[in-house]
Length: 486
Image (cartoon, rainbow, N blue to C red):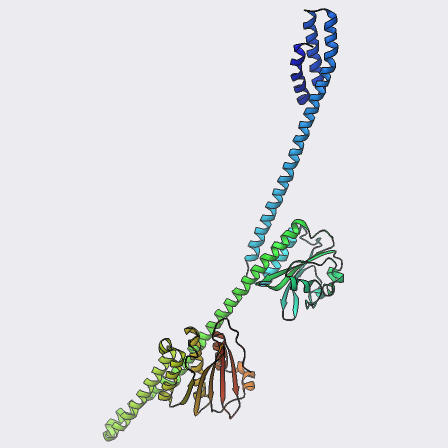
């Protein structure tokens, strides 16, 4: 073979790869003919013909090989493109999932109303399933848990009768999520002892319960069911799992917000009652005394003109009124801010309260305090207990008409026991509480709220004609559990 043959292999293969086997073979044949004419100009015809005969099959083979190589390269290119398309589709799926989770988080956290949060969660699940609308077959429900079990807070595609279903959570899938706190399959709702009560689930062949866990406690669950056995899988399963976790977290925030709002309202009410008490005390005490002083001064002025010899006695009475009003105002200032509480603690403050009450109102008060029993209480809770005792003593003096009042304080294990007792007229506690909303005074409510504010419990014992006992039991440590006294 000549050198031209080997030189022709490269263009032959190249044309086969880029333009197909036919063009490769034609190129090889053309080059072979060209070689033949070159040879016959230098050698005999017979050797040149032999070279021609040998070269044409080889060129055809070269063209086919080049075409095969081109097809192989084309197949590899298609395979790479398919892999790139699969990767792009997976990337788009993940982006879509991330966007859905972001929208889900934004939509759910945009509200602090529990029912609105649950409604939003179910709507987002329907949107993520692609079955949003009247033609969809996805059944969903948000269940919340209370002392009696689970109840349906909101749902999609459940009947009105289904919404009233009783779900104690004692058997079936609901019982399993209470123990495992993990998502639980419920693919045969018709055979579940509790979920079978919901007629809308009977046609479903795939179902799942996803518990909403807050601080290791199952507060509720999201239920999803569908007639398609494979519907609750893949991306949608990932979506509703993330949706459930976000919903549980947001419900916890809503609970905290609601607790803060209730605490704010309660503090506002306590402050309002304190203002009313202060106004009442001022009206019944210093204001009345000041008005009496003004009247007596007016009388003394006229008396001075008519009977000067009796004026000194009237001035003495006015002086006594002024002294009494001064004592009452000092007593009020002391109860509003007992500085001794910060220096001597609750025991010292209660002793001074007893002394000032005796001196100001001539009320007989007996003190029985265990030394150091309240030392472990922080100053804020000591202040709350001081105000509670002050109010209880005031009630005994003003309403119970008590001759004697006893203040007792002692330690009982990890708790502080505090009692204010009197020998007054007493009252029927059940009757008073029955008609309490009709009364303008909220004294008993204030006492209970003060006890709860200090983290303790309060019990009132009273019988008509046999006096009253107000008992408070408060944990010395904030992590202790206060129990009601027997």
